[in-house]
Image 1 (tube, one colour):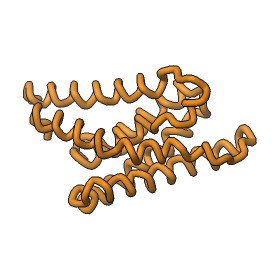
Image 2 (cartoon, helix red, strand yellow; image 1 turned 90 degrees about the horizontal axis):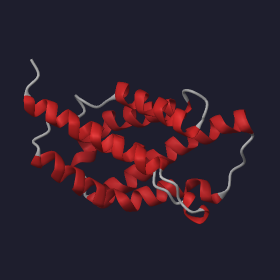
Image 3 (tube, rainbow, N blue to C red; image 1 turned 45 degrees about the vertical axis):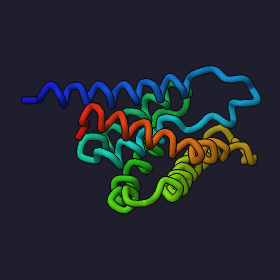
Length: 163
C-alpha cells in the first residue's frame, strides 16, 4: 500500500520534472537560446542522486522521449542521452553526495558534456550539424546553476520528507 507521504513525494518529483520541461520549452530571445541550461538533465541528476531507488533509468527514458517530442528530434535521441546520464549518476551517487557543491557542479558539467556529445554525434549522422563553441554553453550554465538548484531541491525534499 502506498502511503500519503509517498504520494505527496511523487507529486513533488513529477512537479519538478514538469517545471523542468516548461523551462526547457519556454521561448527565449535568439541571443539567449544557446545559454539555456539543460533543465531536464540536471533535475534528473539531482533526483537520481537523492533518491536512486525511485528515480532511475525508466524515468530517464520517459523524460528523454518527452524531450524528443518537444524538440522534434529523432525518437530516442534524447532518451539515449538521458539514460546514459542516469546510469552514470546512479553508479556514482554514493561518491557524489559527499562532494562539496563546487565539485558536484564540475561533475554535473562533465555529465552534461557527455550528454551533449551524444546529442551531437547523433545529429551529425541525421542532420549534418557542425560543431560551434556555443553548442556546449548549456553545460556551462547548468554547472553554474547546480549549487542553487541542489540547495532548493534538497530543502524541498527535506521539507516534504521525500525518501
